[in-house]
Image 1 (tube, one colour):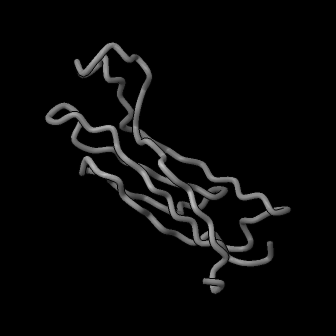
Image 2 (cartoon, rainbow, N blue to C red):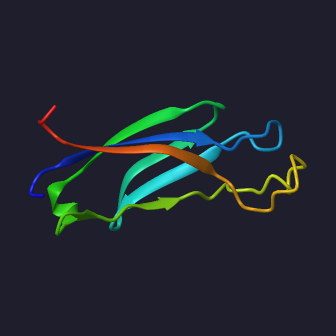
Length: 100
C-alpha cells in the first residue's frame, strides 16, 4: 500500500462478574505491540491504532491478537459451552491515514 493504515477494532468482551471481570488484549504487527488494553465493561468498545506502512507487505497486514484471560462459560458456571472466550470481534475497519 505504501501508506500508514488506521485500524479500528470494535470488540465486546466476555465478562461474567464476579468471576470474570476483565479481558486483557494485545494486538501485534510483527513483534511490535500496537494495542495493549484491558476491557472491563460489558459493552462494545472501539480501539484505534495506526499500522505503519513498513508493516504492510504486498498489501497484506498480519495482525496477531493475544488474549491471556480467556475462559469458557462452562468454567464459570454460565452454561455448558466449553470454548475459551475472550472478546467478540464485532468489526474491523481499515482506513488510509490522511484520506478521510
